[in-house]
Length: 109
Image (cartoon, rainbow, N blue to C red; front, side, top):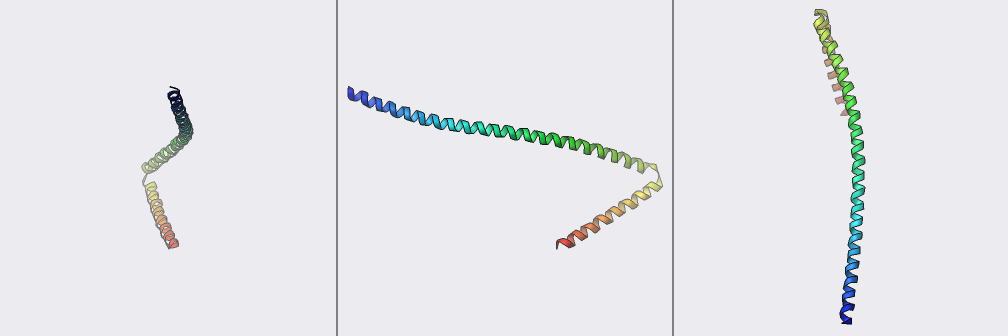
């Protein structure tokens, strides 16, 4: 019977060693998951701040564009002379755009 107890004790030792190894492995994985969760939380906070900043920028751009559209529609409704001036300015902008496009395409070659 003493042989059986000795053999039984070595099995218990092996099982304890295996449990400790698996516990350490699990603790390592849990700590890695915890650090990943903290990193994700920080990244989410950074992205939320970035999106809030973008929202305020878009709101200010929307205000500028709506004011420009109001002034443009007032100018178009005001009379024939302003329409002629608007056509000249529009034509000039188109010519400047194509001129710049041509110059940039020549420089890149």
